[in-house]
Image 1 (spheres, rainbow, N blue to C red):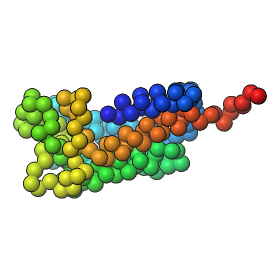
Image 2: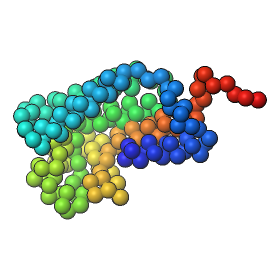
Image 3: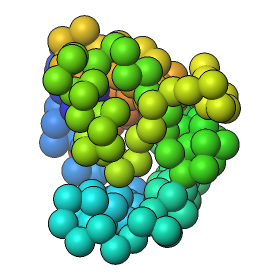
Image 4: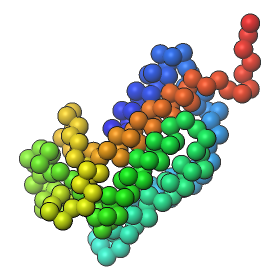
Length: 183
């Protein structure tokens, strides 16, 4: 979903006579926070499919992996699109924290094969099926993405994706401070 929104933002930016080269001139701070967050998430997936040594701390790593993303958004808050990106991340963090470090998923909206893997615990280290004990159900992964077999997303994901679209579009259509217009 995020890749689709980035591409859509680029298409809209191009249709509005923007340029991909304008993205080079965005001054973003704190890329190390993004690297840290994605490294933490990657560690969870690598451990899940290989070692399985992080079982007791996995929920905490998942929760804490969102904090560097929020720091990155805060550091770059002057850019259009960062507010919805931050709100989306925060909504996902809230539901994950409320559910002991896991994102609840409406598994009934997944294909049968994926449902079986999901219910057996072989599908994901960071997701759990929605159940009676699920907290903040409305913020869980409950929205079906029709063109994806594994496509169930949250309201936070939708807001975050919208922020990415705005950010890319704005970045492409904002002229570089170094460029002078020719009259």
